[in-house]
Image 1 (cartoon, one colour):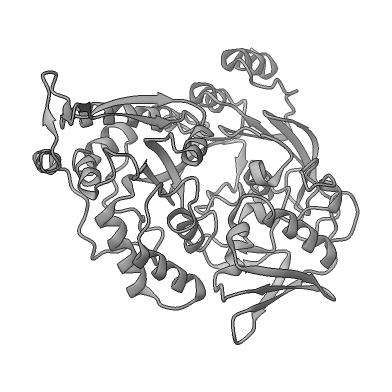
Image 2: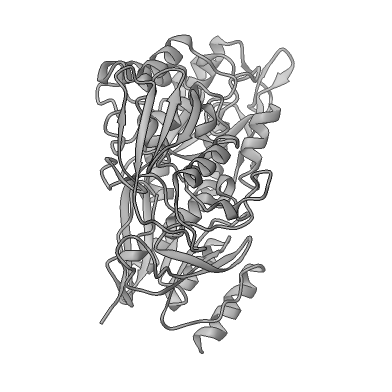
Length: 501
């Protein structure tokens, strides 16, 4: 069976897979994410990971900030003014120069759209001679880290319509897009005028494939050299093949339950603690995820400054969970489901199949919650239903995977999720002490003691309920060498890949 024929068969299996002409000298990347539009605000993470677009600031594998399109930055003594020196000689993929005006244009468009920049105390961004100046209404020590986030990517002015909507992705990266068919595919080729080191492989492609079975088949058959988003069973099977290597690394991402703390059944901290106590994290980690252990707090060890070794760990105690619920006035009905004031403790858990482990974990939670008298309905749908339900107040519980490194300094995500009403964070929960601590840390005030206290508050009140810390897995063909996993999920590292000899 030829590779082209097999790719067509795989496409039919997933009903929407783009059939791309197979090229033996093209590196094919497959993941579960759709390209929603040529728009950084919605699909920017694909363009940065594919090496098409770049940001002013980068981060290395340890989370340390490094130069990107800005070679250096400095802040005034009062913390209110930042100056970023721009890299000289950078050219966009349309041949135009990356000027200070172009950088300001991209950042102003980015901060006018939903995203981390929108919530920052920025009062102005001005172009200078080979530099840009960002002024703030209050200090923000983590500002450079926010400029490393994918929605802060720098694109040519021709990338945007007059109203700022993205119409093309014209970046500065080592690869430029030659074809794109949202929502499923893009092709890119090495950019001859790239300011940095030239890629070793000239042509690359990306395909968004929704079904994990199809992604695994493509890795097994050699239809793609890089395959992300595999379920535990596929990882085990692929790991036994001679021509596929499975890489795995711990990343700053946590599988958790997002709780609507304004729901009448979930408003009391003891109700949320009861849900947490009903979860057998070790069992889920080992039997479902095939991880060595579950999460005993929100922040994984890979978020070193935020992981709190002194924190009392989350535990699995079914009888204690039942006692807490009884103390809140819940009594078991004839069918074993709790009732209070004539209402059954029935709630819906919304999740999505983009990450194949989530529906599996949801099915286990349905059984575990039933043991304490909670009737859980699982709704597996599009991931966009999570932020939509957050905004309209309809979400009750959401099973999600949250990355704390989208902004390389976790303060960016934490501030958005637990103080700024972020779509993927706390819902109808607010703690003034926590908010004060976070704002101080964002300004650069405080350190380990303040971070430890913040983690204690989250552990005590559980506006979200951690279940497991993540490992990123990648199936790599033996046709290539030099593959590595970026634990901060900023890049696929395609520019460093070579064909195997």
